[in-house]
Image (cartoon, rainbow, N blue to C red; front, side, top):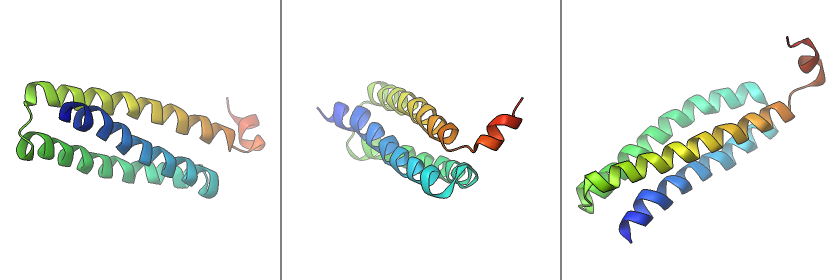
Amino acid sequence: MMYFIMGVLAPILLNLLHLVVGVYVVAKRGNVMSLGFSAVSFLTKTIGMLFLTWLGVGYLELDFRIFVPLLTFFWFFTHVVEALIIQHYMNMFTSEFLKRIQI
């Protein structure tokens, strides 16, 4: 059960939190600010992954051969989904002028 909570739910919730904030930033602040948030979220996600790895392997003593692949797979999968959703919102909030001048 702990493998499911820490290896599956924790990275999904981490990326869901970043997704909600990322969509808010795109909608309220624009695409340029969203790119800046993406850079900051790279750092916060890295810290989150290091913390989850330490918590699972070091503190909860989960088997790293099972836990780390679970954690990284679900983190990477939800990270790609998050990127596609944010890209959709960035395209949705792009002005018509910029859409016309793109090649």
